[in-house]
Length: 339
Ligand code: 2RA
Image (tube, rainbow, N blue to C red; front, top):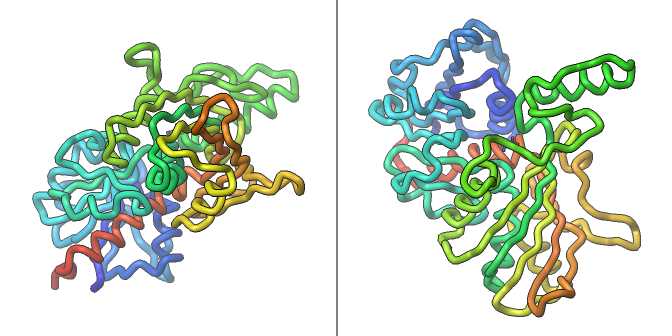
C-alpha cells in the first residue's frame, strides 16, 4: 500500500518536521503534494531527492489524494470538510475538531483503536497533553489514576517560529541593555517565566490548561479522572517539561512505577539521582520518545506519585504523533491507493 499524501502547512515548524519524520519512518508515499497559504506558495522544498513546489491550498488540492495532514491553524476549518468530501482522511493538528464527539482524538500509545471510529477527520491532541498521556496511560492501566496535578514548563517553539525569534532577539537586546518589547508573548520571556499560555477561560484557567483536562479525559476514555493544570512558558527553545503528581486507586511504589514505565511503549525512563540522571529539555529534543524521571512516592498521601516528564513537543507533541496516526490509518484502512 502506498499513499497519496497532502501536507497542508508544509512550510511551518510542524509541517517541516512532518517531512523529516515521513522520511525517517519510510512512510510509503505514492504521490506527495505540499500546500500552504498564498504567502508561502511558490516555496521550493526538497524531499527524498525530488523538488516540490508548495501550492496554495484550495479544495481541489485534495482531488485524488488519500490522506491530508494539516499541520495546524485555521486551515482545517477552511478545507478539512472539502478534503473529506474528496475522499481524504484528514489528520488535523489544530484544536478545531479535538472535542467534537464525532472526531477521534488519538495518541497511538494510548488509544490506537479509536482511529477505526473516524468519519473522515482524526484529531491530533495538544502537545503538552500528548506528552502527559503517554506517561499516564501505563500507570492508569496498572493502578487507576484518580487525580492529576500538573504544572508545565513549555518551550517557546510551542508558539511557532516567532516564539523562537522573540526569545533570541530579546535575550540579545537585554544583554546589550536595549529594550525589546514583547510581541508574541504577553510579557518579556527573556530571563523570565510567563504563567499564561493561550487565552483565559472559565474559572481563570487558560485554554491550554483546559486542553490538558478535557483532552486527557477524552483520550483515556475516562471523565472521572480529575485533572488540574498550570501551564507556564519558559525561556528555552524546544521540548516541554511537566511536573506531574498523581493519586491512584491502588498503591504503586516508585520501583514498580519505574518498571511499568520502562516497559511501556514510547517511553524512556531516565531516573538515577545518584548519578544526576533525569530528563532535561536540552537532551530530549529531536527525539520521539517521552522521557520520565524523578519518580517518587508522594509522602503526603497513601497512594500517590510524583513524576518529571519531558518530550519534544514538535516531534511527539505534534509531527511524530500525526505520522503515527497516518500509519494506523494505513494499517486499518485497507484500500488506499487510487490509480
Ligand atoms: C504551546 N500548546 O506550547 C502550544 C502549542 N500547541 O503553546
